[in-house]
Length: 351
Length: 277
Image (cartoon, helix red, strand yellow):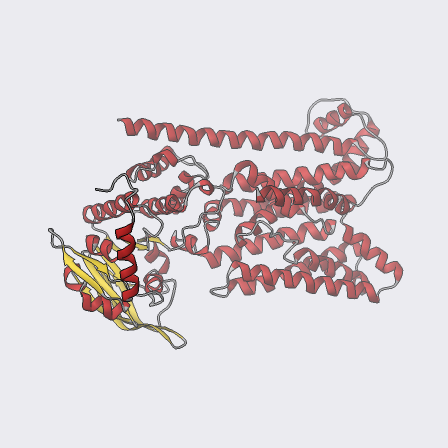
């Protein structure tokens, strides 16, 4: 009798902690919504927050009156950019979370494993060879996507081999990072100064390339990949106990690793090909999510998305308000916020 | 019955199984002993289908282990590998739950949670259920992982050094629970132990591994002899039978000097323990 009471108490406590995690998730969603509205309101002409909310409600079908100019600015100019910030930030957060899960290492992300560098090289190469006669707006993302998948497939090849440890995969990823960075420097070295400038601008990462078409593509890819990942959430949680233990629980580790790598590569390649290289969110967002809700992937995965989205969305706001009137490339802003945070994380971990 | 036939297993010139054959009956606790690096853990991995032998066959209740049957083969196992580190942001309850991986969905029902909590209760660790596993000691982690293996509802339970980090109390809790459940549920239980006295106490069937061969097998009182201990471990030991007929062994310290100095220090020192008599 005594025991059944204790079991009921422990069950209750588990349910409470689940509720707490839902609360954290909702709180961050509200923060994200705030930064989303701020993101739309800031820019060359500052909009009233109330007007922005009205315009958004109007877009959602609510019977609210909105001024014509406000509606045009919101719908045609700022909404795609603000949505892109959320989707790309979320996609980078999820990509990082799954890389860290897969490789059992909190420092892993698509960025540190060379996928972003490969995308950068692909884009630079496309600009260098003159876009194959296509418009550079189409050719450059294609180049980035192809190269990113190429470098990821080198990792797949390794991951498929039996008895490759996650440590060896990380080493291979870092080697790829250096390889593609060197190739990228090579392209810049042989390019004309104007072309080099163009490449550099792409590399900075910028949301201004967002339009309704590429926002839709990125959103569909990201949410589809996330849905598949969520279906495997318990297996991914088990993987964090270590490869051998996951195997002992019946997980086909090689297959899960390959499947997850492919999904992450597709997500990263898509996001990076449209907005360029944005570092640190892939590392930082999952680490924040982990601190907040632990590593039960049912919460960890969605929260990594929301935190990543919030970080990029607020970085987007910052990039517009640091120097009024000037737009800083967002890739620079994220790294500047990211580095101090990263240090804090490392020192915090030591305690 | 888990059956191993004509198993050959080697890495380069390291021979871990040389035409090895044995049978493990259900409802019995089988214990493997043997020197370090002789391939005990590798043998468990082979039985689990994680390592492919060069030759030979493993079968359970007549069904052989093949590449095609691997995933169903593994569902019959509760397997607790040697490594007991748990460096992950999960609670004890969540780690135990993962034992039932295939039954877990995005929304967890009360029944599974209660099952996991009962598994913890049976080994006396219910009070840890909501703790973060990173705050646990090594021994506590080991007990949690044992509960996880039980959650798998196995037909075959394989434990690789399950008591390596446990204190006397939890050694007894784990081994008693294992023994009782093995008999009650008809499991084939197979574990690796290094402590020959524990092996003697809990084994229904003892297998001694050395140089890729099962050099001795049977009831502990027939297997644990001074000659076996000296041959397998290169250690001189006295073996006596206790009142229940279970052998217990005590090794002799190597070298006369060590023996004398120990005796002297025993004579000189006054007992400081409050339990001394």
